[in-house]
Image 1 (cartoon, rainbow, N blue to C red):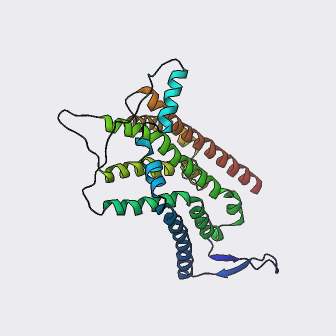
Image 2: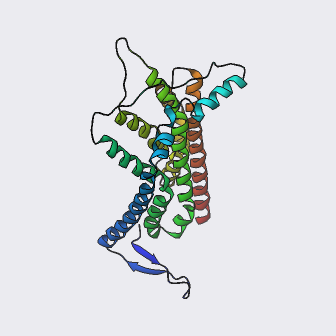
Image 3: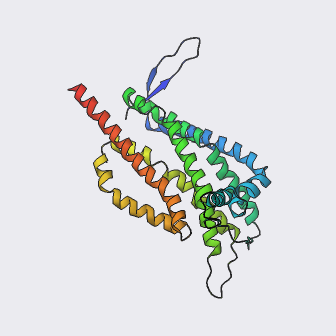
Length: 286
């Protein structure tokens, strides 16, 4: 990777590329400022979220435990529309959250404000990461990566929304309704928050699969043939994950598994496109 920094002059002088050799410590300093700006923007949005306490908790975080949550209503409407009556309707069990720790409410308020701030500012975070990486890329690599910030931001947001509106309602309904003889479940606030984080942010990362496939194909670590060979293994893994996080009915599992199958198939198409492009470029160079 080239260690040169591209500078841009003011609009009066036009745009000029000024190459300057950068040391390892210059790169560390540059990285520090990118991280500083990213964290600053996250904290700014997090502060706004902190003062929107009722919306953040009552509407967003605790939304999936409410029987009136949009997912429950839409699935019930779909059930009636296809002639199954209330057969597909499901709702979370009514439960109260407790906290044994005196400071947990305040710390949870801060933590969730920061996490929501991070999710809302992810396009800016990706853009700062791109600004740090792009000077070290060749013109060809930079052209091939055009639109990467937009694609990564879109996929991450789509994954978080999928986890929030699809996975979390099914999982919360199933977990709160699961019973063992002689045991009464009283979830803690920390447990609920932990599950909500697990259902959303990791899902946003999983939705980066097509981007990962693009990068790994570019550097030659995977091929479309490799992804096709292990398609059945991936399908089994997806079905297992869907079965774990959804209630024990086929409709719920299919609803969760289908987008994950789709992501894998999209990754194969992305890998094919990259391999085809690499082959064309190699032919032109010959």
